[in-house]
Amino acid sequence: MDRNKTLLTKSLLAGALSLSLAGGAIMASAQGVSAIETAKSQGVIGETWEGYIDFAKTPSDAVRDEVEALNIKRRAAYTQLASQRGATVQEVALKTACQIFAAKIQVGQAYLLPDKIWRVREGASPIARPDYCN
Image 1 (cartoon, rainbow, N blue to C red):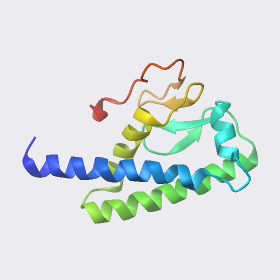
Image 2 (cartoon, rainbow, N blue to C red; image 1 turned 30 degrees about the vertical axis):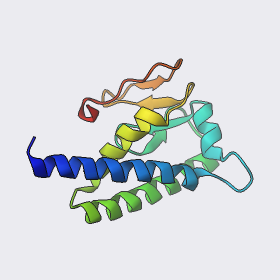
Image 3 (spheres, rainbow, N blue to C red; image 1 turned 45 degrees about the vertical axis):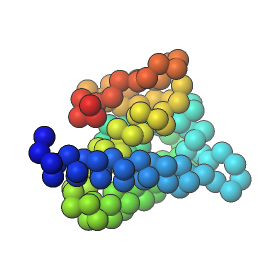
Image 4 (tube, helix red, strand yellow; image 1 turned 60 degrees about the vertical axis):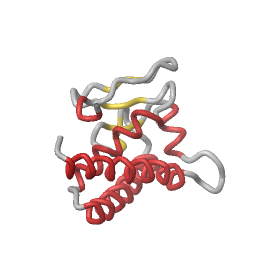
């Protein structure tokens, strides 16, 4: 990999990590556990390989609305980071997904890989990540 591509990758990873950490703050609610966190723990929604949340099972209307709002916020953050880093929105989203898959998906939570099969994390072993994360 050439030097510029290596620097861009490192920059995107650093930005993605800070974005994924900030994502936790976005999902927090003043009253405690958000509907998104509850739906994640129940396997109704999960993280996708594309850097967004999607529906593993049919959600309530309230959860659907919260997921759509969160995905809009993520897209805006990815767009801003992409313009700062000279990358595409998709590159930032994919790198963020790598960070989320590595550190944020908890036991019992669903996640979606590029094969479009929903899985649920079991045990403390690391979960499979998309090939582009390696």
